[in-house]
Amino acid sequence: MENALGTALAPIPQKKKASARIALIDLKEAPRATLTDCFRQFGIESVVVGLDAAERLKKEKFEACVVPLGPGAQAIMEAARGSASNSRMVIYGLGGTAQDAMRYSKYGINAIFQEPVERSAALKLVRATQTLVLHEFRRYVRIPVVTEVQVQVNESKKITATTLEVSSGGMSIKSADDIGAGQAVEVSFALLTLPRIWIRGNVSWRKPKHSFGVRFDTSDDRRRKLKEWIDAYLES
Image (cartoon, rainbow, N blue to C red; front, side, top):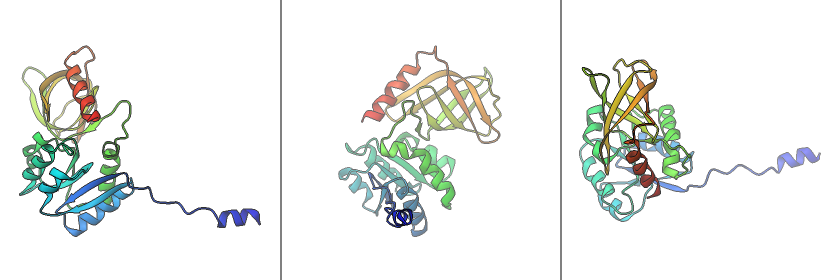
């Protein structure tokens, strides 16, 4: 009887209390509803923001935002990065092509939701990036960021690709080019306030026609500039 009563009176689990806010900027109803639900699962409150987004981002604090990659996106990103309170916010792009993402790479887009927004894919992306939004950093943090990277494979082969995540120890890169694991490379890239740098490394893993990882050479002192930038990014 006691066990039955104890089970009956067990407290109902509460949803995780929101501890961060994300601005959903000028989104259509369907993707807005899906993304709101995905972020809610990790305690991130979604705030609907309309055409006054640029002005609000200059005055109102958000931990992240979702911006459609189309007309008006540049002004919104400039407002965010130029704001004292939102200069380091996590920026998610919505839709657009790889070329669109590169057009805005100087603003440090962290990740991109593909259109149409599918719940499973969106939830996977939110799960992978929510620690950055919530400032719950691991000791060896990986920062999701989409920017152009040049990969020098050998004297005659250089490819242009996009980053997926960056850490002080290496990076993951999206590219369909065929690069084998163990291949020595040199990567060059720039990140927001970090001017372009070059770092030696080796391809540590490869997913066919999808992406590969580069582990930086620990003897390359140029890694220090990246580590300093990451430390400053996380502390701001």
